[in-house]
Length: 244
Image (cartoon, rainbow, N blue to C red; front, side, top):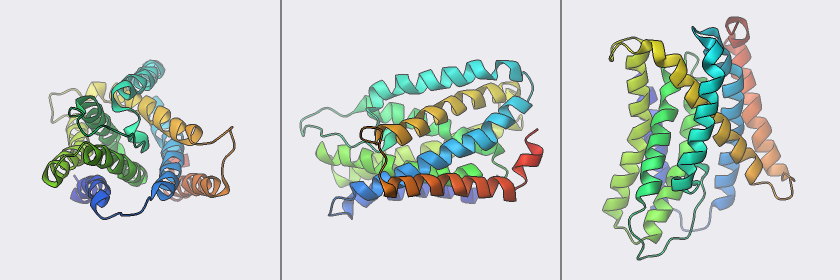
């Protein structure tokens, strides 16, 4: 198991969250561009790598069902997370109770997102997930700050969120090589659920921020860069030859 992957996953979310203490001006435009790039990259990686891999495994005839389950699961999770995983920053009252729904659904979301990394041979996915977690952690920290949480509490909850994707990676690594509970037969089904989540997240990021279906030039460039980098990785890794 590559420790550097665990570190990248943890640090991207952790540093993205504690950046709330360092950023004085509104950086929402920059966050939107990072989101657009990571959304396009995640979508491309899902289509180029994850879906072909899932369908090339055993019992692939049922994969579509699990992709649908993952898609619907993400819709369900967003009823509690309020879209924080898309980098949405909502105004919260100072006297509001701790946002348990947001925290629990975000942590579950991050845990599931870490799972496909066990089969990320070409490191295509690690950077997309890491980038995607920066705005999500920033949005979570912003909500906690608005709710008048102490710095120590915010750092604790951001750390909790940041450790979820590495934990998902670790657990799925154990599942895929059979060292955890011998449930490797279910790994492809789990991957189907994760693919559904990725498809929902990436398409929502790409479509919801455009006004009247018009995309700004900067966002279009960010999207094209995300897709281009995914394609470059796909062809340089020989992904097109082993995806069959």
